[in-house]
Image (tube, rainbow, N blue to C red):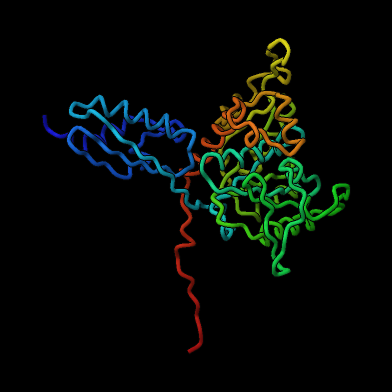
Length: 363
């Protein structure tokens, strides 16, 4: 029996689909190395996004396909991740020590945007990435409470500040710098300036992703923030309710105007399951997120139930993904995180950090 060559194995891998990328492994450029030793094959894959929760399933798919080849009895699969910087909107420079930024937005308040933001950040971390979160809601900061972190951040040099760290997530919020009951009575330009300082003066440490929890709405403040803050892409959070979907469409259109790609839609509170009898009821309607996704040719990244444990978790500084890692809800958040990071990995890469700085001096 002749040994199977690499080209045959590579062709077989072109039939294995990465469910997050929606591409085969060859087209996705995920095949790093192929080696054979008699009837044994060794395959090394490198994904451009974190996928700890998907490694086992992908490995099994590869083994299943390759063991169908005549001459292959066993397959060893090694899967690694290489998260690189991707481009942001035109005219805006990427941030130092932050490879990618993901904006989480909603057209209106009360749809669970901040809850989704913190659990998305924790889910990306659980998948294998180094993650931070910026609370961009100056008027109503939520992340200090949701992360269970109220300490004032340190400043070593008096010019920059260190992010607070909770559950392994780096975070910054105006809520760390003011009293809980202090209202921020600021006009738009002051809010924009404060946010730019929070973002630029924080000593972020080698982040793969910075999740930006944007304020609700699509007014001048939100538009200005999206024009000045580097954003790799955005996620829209909505509920199935018609009113919420109307505003979610405005948020999506806002990102189109500033040329920020939208990764997809997260439908929150999609279904209520009675904790006593198990009865399921679509309190806010059904199918709205899917219809919007189809209308605007974006993905429905996931649907989350209306569950008391999600609300209790963030209210008490104990987010679901961190405190209940084996739950079905955490599984949904991690699936959303993988899909979002996978879509980001398909975007154009940013090479600005690789070019040397050119300095012209007088001789």
